[in-house]
Structures are given as C-alpha cells and as structure tokens.
Length: 562
Image 1 (spheres, rainbow, N blue to C red):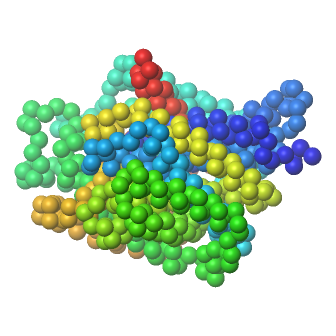
Image 2: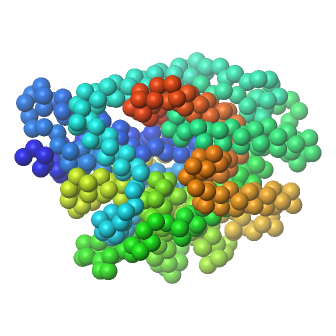
Image 3: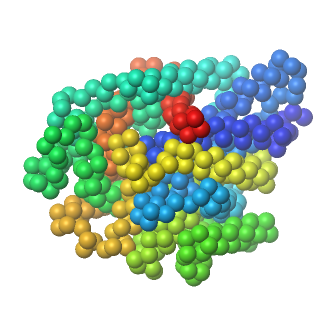
C-alpha cells in the first residue's frame, strides 16, 4: 500500500534538497543572533505540498506519512549541522589562534562530530523513546502538524502559502536594504552610539515571534540593563573609552567589557538549570540506555569515535589521550542533553559545550585547541543526538523503521556538512575582521572565545572591574537557573529567561529591540485571533527567518563568485 512507502528515492532526495536549501538559513541566523530554527515542519509542509500535488495531477502514488517522516528527518539533520561548531567553537578557534581549516578538513570535522551523535541517539532510542514517558515537545509538534495536514489536505496548502509569502517579503526587504541601505531609526545620536535603534530586519521580527513573549521581554530588559544603564556608566567612569567624535554604534568597544558578565550569567544559569533539571527529570526509573548495545550502534560508535579522535590528533595536534577522553565525555553529555530535550524541548547545546570546556580546562589547562575542539565534540554530538531523537519520536508514533531513519539522518549530515561549510566560508571569509561586530555579532562565538580565554589565560589577565562584573553575572545566573529549574510551570512563564538576559549583553541593543517587537506582535495576534495564530504565526515567522537569511546568503555567494 501507498502508506507502506518509507525510504523511497523521492522522499530521500526531497529531504536532502530541502536540507541543502535550509542549512544556510541556520548558519546565517546563528552568526547573527546565536540561535537556529528546527526545520522539520518547513520540510514536512513543502514535501507534502509538492508530492501530494503531483500525485493529484499526474496520478502517481500518494505521498505517505512515512515518506514525510524520512523527508523531515533528512532535512532537519542537514539544518542541524549548526550544532557541530560552525557558528561557535570553530570561529572562536580561528579568532584566538589565527588558524583556519581548509574546506575539506573542516567538512570532515563537522561531519565526524555530527556522526557520533547519530549513533548515540540510536543507542538511546530504546530507553528514551520506546520505553520512556518523555514527551520530546519538538517531535510532538512535528507529529501534530503531520497529522493535521494529512487529515485536512487543504491546510498544508494554506500554511505553505503563508510560509512562501512571508519568505518573499523578508527576502525583498533584505535585498532592498543591501541595495539602498534602509534607514535605522534611533531615538537620538547618543543612544545610537549605544546601539539603540530599530533594525529593518524581518528575520529578527520572525525570531521574536518564534521565541515568544517571555524571551522577547527578557531580551528587552537585558538590553536596557546592559546598553542603557551599564554602558553609559562605563563611559562616564572611563572604564571604556569612546572616541569623542565617534558616530554610529560603538558596539566593538563596549562589547569587550559587556560580554564578560553576559557570558557568566548565561553559562552559570544554563549549567545550574541543566543540572537541576537532569536530577529532577521525570521517568527516573528509565535507564540511560539499553542493557546491551546492538551490533550496528556499537560499530557506528566505534567508527565515529575513531574518526573524531584521528581528526583531533591530525588537524589540531591534540594529544591522543585527550582526544580519546573526549569520546566518553561526549557520549555522557549527549545523554544528558537528550533527557533535557525530552522533558523541555530546549536543546542545551551551549551548556553542554561549556561543561566540556570546563572539564578540559581542568584536565589540560592553557591549551586552546583542546579546550575548544575537544569540547566541540560534545556539542556536535549532542546537537545531532537530540535532533534524531525528536525524529525517532515521530517515527515511533508512525511505525517507522529506525534503521531507515538513521540512513536518512546520516545522508542529511553529509549534505549539511558540505553546504554548511561552504556557507560559513562564503559569509565569513575573514573571521578575525568580520566577527563580533555590529554586522555579525556572533554571540555564540563570543561566548566560546571568552570561556576559552578565561580558562587558558586565567582570570588574572582580566581587570578587577571585569572580574567583579563576572561575579555579579555568575550570581545572577545561579539564582535565575535555580528559579528556572525549580519553579512550577504556572510560575515559570512569568520568570525572565536567563539565556535571553545574558544574550542581550552580547548582541547590539538594536537586535534585542527588534526581536522584542516581533515577540509582542506575535503575542498580540495570538491574543486577538487565537485559532488563526496557532495555525499560522509560527509558519509565518519561520518564513521571515528563512526568506531573509536565504537572501543574505545568496547575495554573499553571488559576491564571492562575481
């Protein structure tokens, strides 16, 4: 029967093509604001609309639910390549050492750390998907969308039309801004110097709609605190010196001080919240893994682990012992991330990376390559592991074959590695000159770089005022992390987001203001037209993100080739 079709050529190719088209969007947004978007639902809607339409017109076999699952699995695998380090430890390594990997070596590295996460996910599938009560919210959202479009075929066409319209509008605005430099409204020249302005960016408006009102307002509060209160005080006290005749945003000078309390707040809050949530996670009786590894996951883990170790030694000159230690640490932390994602839907990739950095900072103090690239292994593995477990959640509900999903995931990371590295190198040909600037704030890069510098150079290299600011940020992060993890659900939505507060210290205030505007706009729409909002707000927001980022990437590639 048509519904038995699963790993078909059309399903796989559709997912890989969509993954290749969507991967640049996440690379672009990751370098802009440090966040990415799960592409499962976009791939699901586009694949359904294309193949159901062709089946209706040409009389071919119907597009089955299992084929949709293969398509979204491979596409999301490609787009999730962002977790492999392309917008965090890899550029941070270049900023500190001045060394950049050539395309082939970087592609092999990105693929290897992602492949490790695939096999960890297959190992965990039995305990966390089949026998567990963990919900995996992102997977359930994808499943709910799939059931809706198959139950009401016209719904997919409507959502796809909204997606395409939003993407076209965002792309047009981005191209207009690149061609004519659209105006940035600022309340005054003095506030503009402190980065307060409204960006003509529909990507930021879309991300605001995706992250929601809690995160949007937290970004606004963080921007007012960091850039509205602390930054003017730094200038007044002479702790940061701005040129007296400076015009426009002075982001580069102010960020050198503000990133330290922001990073301390984010790292402490996410680590505390991660630890407490892991200890309090539901379904504690569930084992972290099955009693025995079946032969295929065992072989996959050995091959992927061997590849990661050999590349650490060959590309970065990391000692064999440290490279070998990164594998069990990465597997353990990927398991922790999987449980957190299963309970909350939030992938703690940044926290996983910082835990690894702290661990290697103790084991190998003063060694930048180990601190960044061995820790990169854990973040990359955790990202692909959690992505595949969400797909496994959908597949288990549909009766899909897990081995076929693993094939789709592996092919997806091949495409994601190839396209992701090309996109990164095209967008950022000179990381040292281009990153941590108003154009490319790259907050994840700033965070990894700051932690590596603090652990390798020691806190003694920082001035007293910066160390006190870090302490204040760490204490605030500790308190917010505890509140976030321990607060009951009705109260949790009223608490500020520690991650967003810390992020607001590392990105220009203009980005936070625009994202807060997007979050407020989405909330008002949902409050007024709830039914329409539930169907179309996230789809429209995703279209804004994809449209602007794909236009920006396209222009960068055109400039590179011309």
